[in-house]
Amino acid sequence: MLFAHDTEIALAEAAALVNTLSDGVDALATRAGLDAFLQRYPFSGTYLRTEEELASVRSLRDRLRTLWSARSREEAAAIVNELLLESDARPYLSKHDQWDWHLHVTRPDAPLATRIGAEAAMGFLDLVRSDDLGRLRFCSADDCSDVLVDLSRNKSKRYCDTGNCGNRTNVAAYRARRRTSA
Ligand SMILES: [Zn+2]
Ligand SMILES: [Zn+2]
Image (cartoon, rainbow, N blue to C red):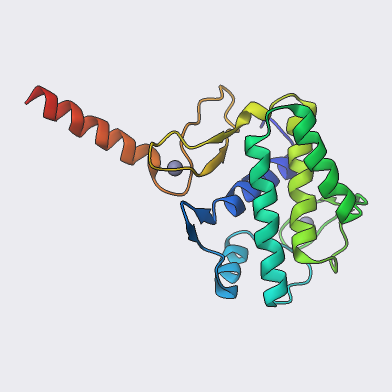
């Protein structure tokens, strides 16, 4: 493992949240969409199921996406610091459900978007301080603009996890080769 367990989970969840808006299709258009997302990526703490809460998660999603287009560590650090400041982050150890001791930085009754934002910030700050922002990439498939976090040792991940893009691209390349050789 390259980073702490919490960091890798936080980064994967941040990417998954960003990818809920995928080429114009919004999986978080409704509260049911947020239910489904939280079933896949559970967050402990309060969940109010209000429209306001949903709107704040969607706006957090837009802010997290900007980390993928940040052009410098300074730019990324500023976004991370803003998220930490807003969440009034105070680190403490927690142990709950199936999870062993791990770091929390917000209280369980802080708003959902605040908690998700703080957790994501804790993941991104590791990438900033290890000068590893290059691991934040956009999917290499021509028809996909989803984001990915490359946590592979040799930095070889090219496709997102959402759209089966690696397979699709390989099949398309194979068909194109067959067409030209036919
Ligand atoms: Zn926890
Ligand atoms: Zn993709």
